[in-house]
Amino acid sequence: MKPRHLISIDDLKKNEIEVLLENAASYKEISTREVKKVPALRGKTVALCFIEPSTRTRASFEIAAKRLSADTLSFQSKGTSLEKGESIKDMAKTLQAMKIDALVLRHSSCGVHYQLTDYDFSVINAGDGMHEHPTQALLDLFTIKDKIGRLENLKVAIVGDILHSRVARSLIKVLKLFEAEITLVAPPTLLPPFLTGLDLKITNFLEEVVSEVDIVYLLRIQKERAALSYFPSEREYIRFYSFQLSHLKKLKKGSFLMHPGPINRGWELSSEVADSDVSLIEEQVENGVAVRMAVLSYFLAGEGGN
Ligand code: CP
Image 1 (tube, rainbow, N blue to C red):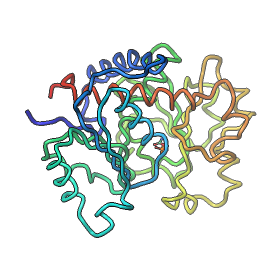
Image 2 (cartoon, rainbow, N blue to C red):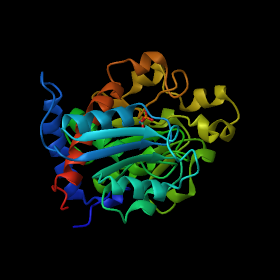
Image 3 (cartoon, rainbow, N blue to C red):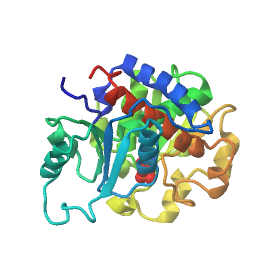
Image 4 (cartoon, protein in one colour):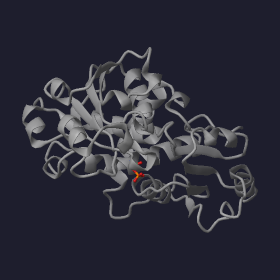
C-alpha cells in the first residue's frame, strides 16, 4: 500500500480533520499521565529533519513520536551529507534504505516535499518556505474548538505579515472548510496576490476589527524573509498592527488572541498582552503535541487509510 502524505491542508478532507481533532483530544490526556507513553507506533521509525530553525514544531513532533513509542532520529542540515552537497532526494533514498516509516521535514523551499512522495514512507510537512504549515493549522483549529467550543460561524482576524506566512496559508484553508468569516489585517504590501478570488475581508486597520471577532490571530514579522523592508518603519507597524493593552480592552467577551510563535515581544504584541488571560499562545504549544500525536498515528498506524 502506498503511504499517505501530509504536505498541504488540501491533503485532508473535512471529515478527516474532524477525526484528527477528536483523536487529538484523547491523545492530550496521555500527556497528563505519570507515564506519558502508549504503544500505538511501537516498531515504527520517524525521521525528523529540520533544515530551517524550529523550537515548537521540532520538539513537539519528537515528543509526539516518542509518546507513541516510535523510534526517532532527529537531524538538521549541519552535520549531514546535505552539507557536502547531497540532494534532498538522495537523502530520502538513503533513509528509505534504512526503512523509516515517516519523514517530518521542515525546509526553506516551497513545495520541496512534493519531490519526495514516491518513496516508501509518509512525508509530513513541518513548514516549507512561504507555502504551508498544515500541522500548525490543525493545532490552531484544535485550540479554537477547545476554547470557543465550536468551529462553525467563527469570526477570525489574521493580522500582520500574511505575505510570508505559511501559517496563514494553511490556516485560511482550514478555517474556510468550516466557513469562518476571515478578515485579513495588514499593510497593503504584506497582502499577497493569492488572496484574490477567496472570500476574505481585508482591512488595513486593526482598530476596526478587534471588537467584532472571536479570534485575533497575530502573525510573526518574518525578519528572515526581509519583512521589515515592506513597511516604512517599526514605529508605523507597531502603531497600526501591534496588539496593545488598548486593543485588549476592546476585545469582545469570550474572544481570544493567538500567535503561532515565536513571538517578537513589542512588535506583533506587547508583553502584557502576550502574558494576559486571553492569550492562547501556551495552549497552542501544549496542543501541538496532542495534534501531532494524532497526525502521526493517523498516517502511520493505518487510521488514515494506509
Ligand atoms: N510555530 C512554529 O512553527 O514555531 P517553530 O518555528 O518554533 O517550530
